[in-house]
Image (spheres, rainbow, N blue to C red):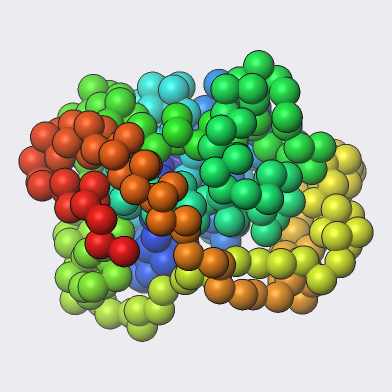
Length: 306
C-alpha cells in the first residue's frame, strides 16, 4: 500500500500552499488533491475536519504511481507537540520540509486569515493577541471556531518556531530536514524549488510556472449564513459518515468552489506600527535562537523596516 515518505509540516502562512502546488506538478511526485489531511498531531483536536484512521489516510495516496515520491502538506504538524514523533513512528525514514517566515508577519497574516474564515471574532489584532491568556482558560473563544482546535488561537505559541523545529531535528536529524525561508521563496522561487527537488532526490530540471498563492489578500464573506453552512462541522461529519469515500473528495471540492464564490478578496490594512514594534522586540530573542539553530542570520526580522 502506498505510504507518504515526505511531509511538508508548516508553518502556517509561510508559503506552503505555493510549494505544495509546485511540487504536485512534478511527474515524479504525488501529493493528494486535498492539501491538509492533518492525520498526525493527536494533541490538537481537529474533530470532524481531519482523517480519523489510517485506512482513510492511506486512501488519499492510492493513485500514486510506482516509483513516485509520495508526500503531503499539513501546516499544523510543526505546531503540534506530538506530530513529529507520530510521523517518525509511521515512517522512520521520512523527509521533512519546514517553511518559516518572520514571526510578526506570519502572525498578522494568520490573524487576518482567521478573521476572513470566521475562526476569529476579535476585530482588532492587538486585542486578539491580548486575549491569549484568557483563551488558554477556555474564555473568549469564538462560537464560529467550528471544529478547529482552540490552540490555533494561541498566536504567540504558534510563533515559537525554535522549539518546534528542534522537535523535528531530534526525531529526524538535520540531513532529513529541508528548510525554506519565505523571503527566499518570494525573491528566488526557481532556486528554492530546485533545491527542494534536489532534497527529494527527483529531477531538478523540471520547471513550473511560479505564482504566489494567497498573496497579501484576505477573504471577506458576502454571506455569513452561507459561510456557516459550508463550514458547519455537523455537515462535514455527516458527509464523512454517510457518503462513500470516493465521492467525498468531489463534494468537498464543490463546497470549496461555493466558498470561493461566496468570498471577495481585499488587501488587509497595514499592521499598527506600535504593535509591530512591540512584537519585533518581543520576538527578537526567539529570532536569535532560530538563527543559531538554522545557522543563518535572520535577525533582520527584528529590525523595523516598515
